[in-house]
Image 1: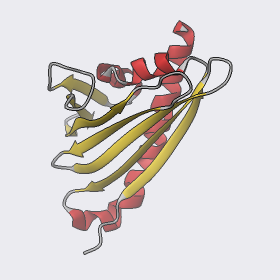
Image 2: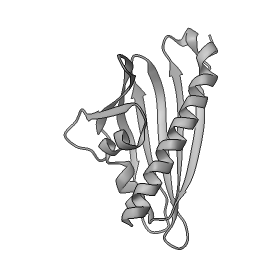
Image 3: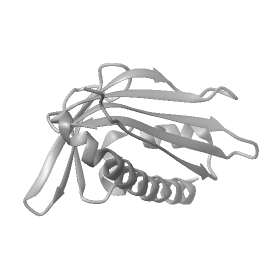
Length: 156
């Protein structure tokens, strides 16, 4: 059976240095402030680098699911070099991967590209849910990244 992954990418330009934006993005607890209907808890002592783990719980009232994740790639931005973080999503409901890049731009700005390539479990639901999950993900992460950008820009 061919899996129909939900794939999407969202980009936002931030008027703040790449290192500041990276620091905000990899403070996993911050995501609960930006992502609607989401709480985050850490599952490892360390927050940085490969092996860092956390669970995002998406919920609407009593309905919800856990989205456990582990960082598998970690390369912070440095100077003109973009940063990239790769995340393995290994939950009972959503599986796949997410990654984001922070690309330094001129004049102390940067661009964040957030991508996900996920599938819904059981996989037979992907035929029905793949496009919906991608659309909801694109809208939700777009909103969250814009909120993050405003927050970091105010501090910068």
